[in-house]
Length: 64
Image (tube, rainbow, N blue to C red; front, side, top):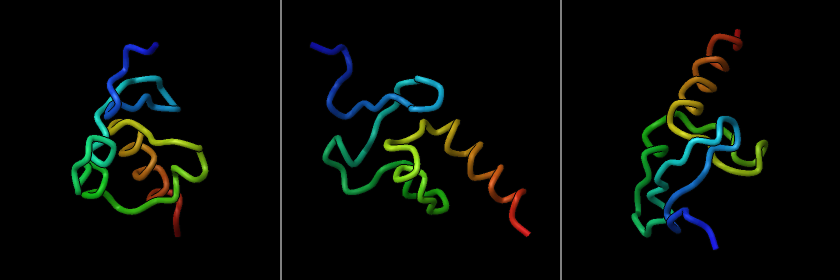
């Protein structure tokens, strides 16, 4: 048995828990408002808002 609600994810990078709107049954999740990145496919799961924003910023700085 787990203490995490079905709509709660755990960040694969930092371990923080966060709410996923898509898993909660909403048609909109907080991540839909951010630039699209193929991170979930690369990492195998989602990142928390803080880690996802940091990753997007880092990739933006790295691109020419």
